[in-house]
Length: 196
Image (cartoon, rainbow, N blue to C red; front, side, top):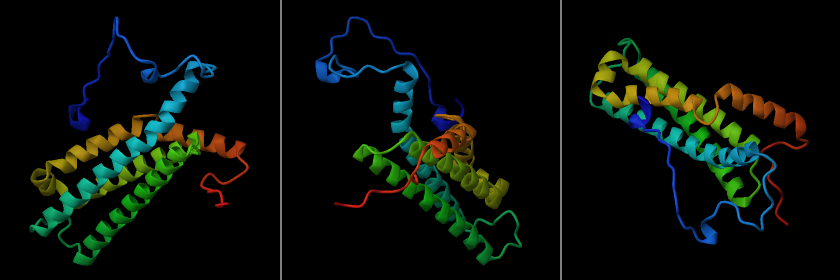
């Protein structure tokens, strides 16, 4: 893969490996999964908030590199852009990144509490991937060719954002899952029970 620092995909296989009981994914005393998809869905539900956190980290790096380039004398692609306009763009990036970060934390907390749902994970992934696309695109648009040449991380982050969109299910798939879960649900997905 070109993005994600040239991530290598591979198949691992093990033969004659001995594992102790606590290292097994499923033990004899657990209820077996009804089907393979249920197991895959549970792993996606746990992994999507983690992937979303990686997206937030990518956005933070892009934002920091862009700001450093501008502070070092880099000029926005539209030289007529006022300082206030550039600052407004950076503040908008901050707002989106913070919202995605808070969503990641909320879903991770709910996962730790055992209350997270597929809907929580899907909402987090769909939102964070959209933020990654917006932030990286805005950075590229603001910096232009000169900024990309001076900060290769801008282009790399843009490529990574494209990969994030399809990893763990596309944004369209996430939105479909959210809509179906919302139809089945009687409560708001972010309702947190009152302390007793």
